[in-house]
Length: 232
Image 1 (cartoon, rainbow, N blue to C red):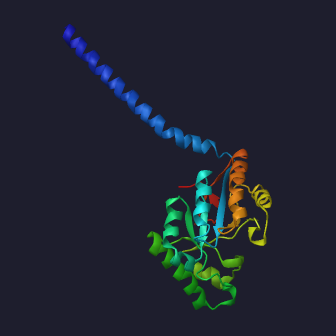
Image 2 (image 1 turned 135 degrees about the vertical axis):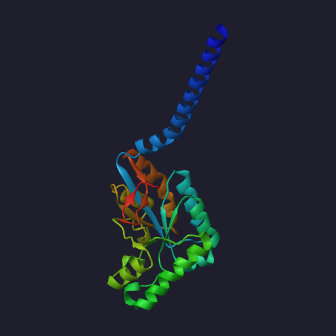
Image 3 (image 1 turned 45 degrees about the vertical axis):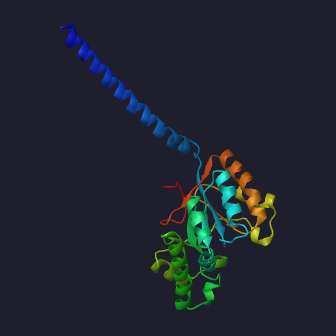
């Protein structure tokens, strides 16, 4: 009788121990996800960088983003991607999303439908050759678009993405001016920045700090809505 009781007690302890182990594992797994959600009570914004990749600055930009816990969408020029496939892979490996910014950065609104298609399709191919995955997002150079540009993009499975906030780094904005522009971002909004400017890279730590202070996180751009959403 005492032996049977002892065996039952041993089994009960084993079951309880297994249950506690599962609970601990679940808590450990859920903890970081819960913390990430708690860090973003005000929502998500889209950080975007056009005109890369380029050997002079892309790795510096990626290192700055990673060091500050930020992910961004890189709208690559196709010929740059074609010439620097290792940098496209570096963007992907750093956790960035890669978009299509045309092949030669022309004024697409002044081109024929066939020319527009070639610009976008060649970029799709260049990125896919480098990473194995074609972009689903497209930004027209200079933000210039029309019905034909939009139709070609849709035909290639691309969602057109413009911006809500212009950092004006392309116009010579200082680091502080870029930080100030980014401080106006609200949930769902997208900011335009560029790959090639040292002032933009220098702004990243302050942009990250400002977003954190306002309960915002850097998210992905939804291929359905073109707005910033939580990463998946």
